[in-house]
Image (tube, rainbow, N blue to C red; front, side, top):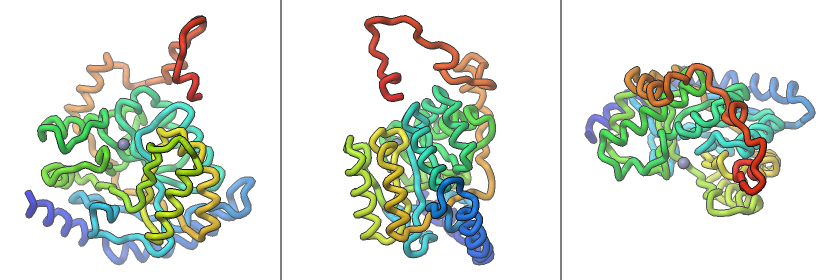
Length: 308
Ligand SMILES: [Zn+2]
């Protein structure tokens, strides 16, 4: 397994060629210029300084917390990533904050959440962000039998595809960043890139937006650059983001947008399994609140309404 992993990574390294990076560097200036000129209501947005395209062949891993083969960020460069959505209230707030700064991020949605709130995931796509996946139900894959772990990965990818109506990017993040050598090798065979992190905000540990901002800015100052892990699922992050993006701009950080060369190829068996479980209604999923809404419940405490 180990040899297979190393071989897969070596292949991927060869494919992330100097030519590709040179082209990305050439377009970086164009992106920055275009963003400043076209960000409505914001003359000096955080914007996007550089866009990179990842060839996920062989399942390359990114984020120095766990993977050190590909150091693709330069000093002060930051990739914003958001996990565990889509979620009412919080994900739209994150999207609004990103749009106000004309900047882009990578989202790693949970399959079940994507099925519950497909319309919110479609908003993420409409915002021009990159969407990967983060399993079907957020189990710790390192503790599951391999077959069950693969089911979680594949069903999660199929669910995101189903919610979007189009295949997402072949990028994956392990729940709680817990992987195994076998699963890394498996994702290598599936040509799915793996995102770990450089800066873990631990935003789920606090309810205070100011603590999220302090956590990210303090850790970034130390690392100087990196992939930042946050959660669009978290209310504290949704509240913190407008100010955090302003702080990143003021701190001289530059956002790198991540795209992939190809979309993911989901497996037909999982697409069909999902379709079957949902009774053949995955084609035109609407928001639950658009299909069924509470019109009378004097003593019913709806916690989803509270979040909105
Ligand atoms: Zn997660």
